[in-house]
Amino acid sequence: MTAKHSTLPVSYRLAVLSRVLAAVLGGYVLTALASVCLTLWVPMARADAAVTGMTGSFLVYLLAVLWCFGCRTAWRAWLGLIAPSLVLATAAGLMYWGGRA
Amino acid sequence: MKEGFRQAMAWLHTWAGLIFGWLLFAIFLTGTLAYFKDEISHWMQPEIPARSVPTETSLTLAQQYLEQRAANASRWIIDLPGAREPALSVRWQSAPAKPGERGQFTEKRLDPLSGAEVQGRDTQGGEFFYRFHFQLQMPYPWGRWLSTIAAMVMFVALISGIITHKKIFKDFFTFRPRKGQRSWLDGHNAVGVLVLPFHLMITYSSLVIFMTMVMPASILAAYKGDVQAFFSDVFPAANTAKVAGTPEPLLPLAPLLEKAREHWAGGSAGQVTVNNPGDTNASVVLTHNGTDRVVHEFGRAVTFSGVTGQLLAKTPEQSVPMAVAGSFYGLHMGRFADPVLRWLYFICGLASTAMIGTGLVIWLGKRQLKHAKSGVLPFELKLVEVLNIASMSGLVIAVAAFFWANRVLPVDMAERPQWEINSFFIAWGLSLLHAAWRRGRGAWVEQLALAALLFASVPLLNAVTTLHHLGNSLATGDWAMAGFDLACLGSGLFLGWAARKMQRAGQPEITGRNRQRSIPLEQEAH
Image (cartoon, rainbow over all chains, first blue to last red; front, side, top):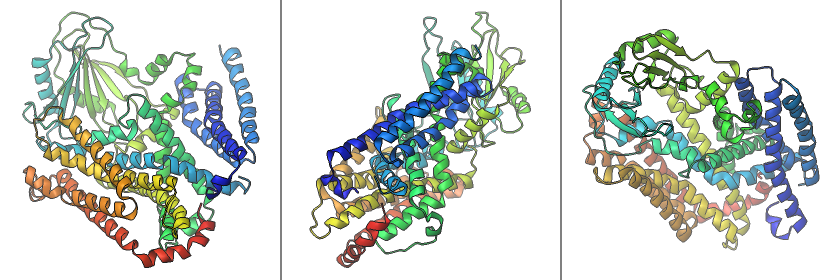
């Protein structure tokens, strides 16, 4: 795959760049949202809930990165991050503004 | 990236591994050395005697010293000598000039038997490797961020590597030595699989250690932005009473050690903090040394009044989530490890380092094969080659230079610790220049040979510059001192063997054999 780099079209390189950005930035946002969501929904004391959310979050990051490079196109990579991010943001938002307080 | 999931993972493994490989190699090697940081510090400060004295005696001496020298300080911190750290260290924080400011800290090392100040040569010792391993000699917090990002890349590279390698456990039993590129790949897989639980544990735990820094969203959400409230919940022992202004003598500290032990099921205090000594509101915090069990408990302590000796506070039992995070922390640091387990940690760390190193060699080796006929490498491959050499053999030379500087630099030199560290980076920089100038196998052989020489001669250097040579340290049972010398000698012999292997492998008939293998390798390795 690498040896052909010099002959690879620009569109391929842009797609790789897009996947890298999706994995690093999109993956981080998804991970942060998952971590917040878990923290707000687990029935634990605040400190414990925060620690639980943070401890598990890196597994989500891993899965997000693997997804971004494993799926068929760069567009699907983004879609696969944005959709769950919206769901998690909604769930977290419900609890943050409407929940315990 | 249309070849399917496994190919995509191979691509990810290859490129993530390459780009962060050099940095990860340095992080893993220095981190591995940090498992013996106390022993390294002991070797680097031979003036500090290794004595075992009752903790009570040391604490009484420390209290006498501090009452004479630092009676007006706002806080004393006494680090008690342990099984691995022979020094008794006292620090005190002067009362701040204005309220709200932080007072200056002063640190002295005392002889745990006589209470006199010890004037060891000034050095960072093993602490340098420990700090470099996660701060990378960069200003706070950039080094911590970069090393945590590298850890996340390592995690991705590990898992994508496992996915790539479908026959991972079966192939583990295949090692084909003396087959050039093939052997490197077998070796990479073998060290990868053999200590896989260690790789995964050490990588994930490093993320957990810095999670409050890199993933603070949970704290912000749970505490509505008040991060300080989170830390007060997690470290309750840090909340202490303000100074009252009424003088009251401090009670003898030594008996509190026994009282603290009664509160803990095992282990004893490693650190004693006295807040507002000589005041009515004096409090004594005894922090657990954390060497009795795997699960680390942040700030596990009991607090007594410094006047009456009455129990003021005790950290509550750890909750399950804290214990989970604490076990990641404890497993990573390995403070509980006895000598045998500590060596096992060290060997596993070396295996991780070797896995990263072999991966980098494979990346280049595979691509070099295509240019074997012409013998001319394109620029990017030359760059990888130079970085491979400097990041691996160059780093080993730098470590040796650090040890040499400790013995060769004058004991009373100004800014001595800084010059030891400078020697490390100067040696590393020179090895980079050398690798760029010499290139290829020649550079490998020369650097490995130099590293071998520097390491193998460490016992000799120690014998010439101090009285703690092997004959002496073995006879007196100073195992840290003797172990350091012997480990350096062993490393020197290994590096010498590696240099010789490298030189032999460069002979033409073997290169020819490699060339024939280039086609099957293309299909097998990614």
